[in-house]
Image (tube, rainbow, N blue to C red; front, side):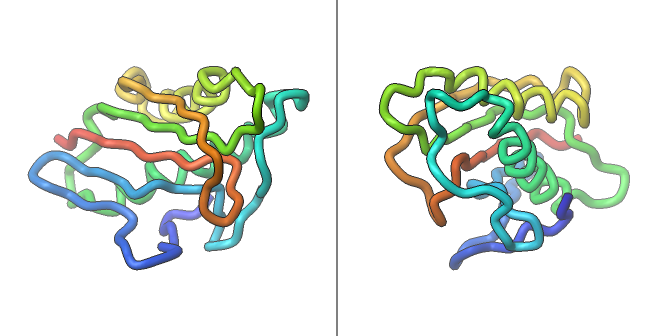
Length: 139
């Protein structure tokens, strides 16, 4: 997965203040190209969207890690926000967000478990199915 998320507008992939890193919202892009587009449909299996969720959270984690200096690491993901471009009637927001939490735990262990919001939205940039933002503490 990409180690350098490519901004799709006038912003930085992540910003650091002291020991905190805030990422921009990341969609499921690989090398700047969407790997999945369209709304999340209530009647499709959730696994349909797993790769998109994992790519988006991978991009967010890479953006945060790109701001680390030698001998630093992410001590804790403090906040995980998962925005879902869901059709009317979709209610499994938390289950889709679990894919992101699982990915972060695979990469960071228990430090990947964060306070979390899973939100349904009317649209997302580029018709992305998900957009993910993280806030991390660095040590």
